[in-house]
Image 1 (spheres, helix red, strand yellow):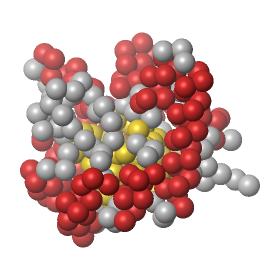
Image 2: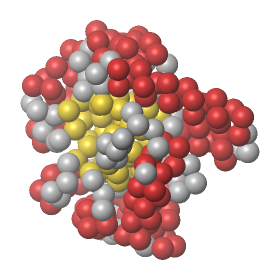
Image 3: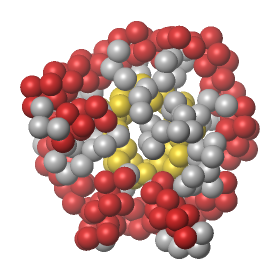
Image 4: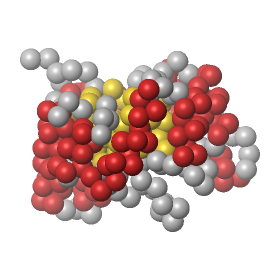
Length: 248
């Protein structure tokens, strides 16, 4: 049986991080998005953090005007971000937990513990035509709560698995991978579209690309890092090949 296609979403946040390090106009994340589009990406992801540490408001405006690929707009579940999302109406809105002191997103949303507020929060986004995605761990309670409050998508946090691989802990990594696989299957059975991302590289992406339940992987920091050595287009094209090979 032919597996359904797997999409690659390219996160351009850290092109903006490099730009902001010098306060200059370059490198331009919108240019990176256009290059990703040409290299075979299926979508662009950008996270507008409350502290604007990388992507800024003007980037979102320019992305909406420049790209023809779907924009996955990552954001915290705050009124400020909801207002921005409703103004732009991106293809997808992915709600993520956010703490100012963290270097990067450290875990998944507590949907089960905040279900009533999140249900109210996502309702106008859905009505505006954006697909609402929730960035969560593989806990069954979080998956079930995501389905109950009306999300269209869950994105499973793969960062812990990648960390275990980097630490040389294959047994623990295998357990985490199986938990993610079971979570993806549960989410699919609940009627959710299932995505995954965080920390994925050429060395860690294959097991996820091979999961039947997954429809999209979102990858950013690794691709921007590899772009220093091989160029952004070739890095994305190689990731696309690795994913496609594993999918087959």
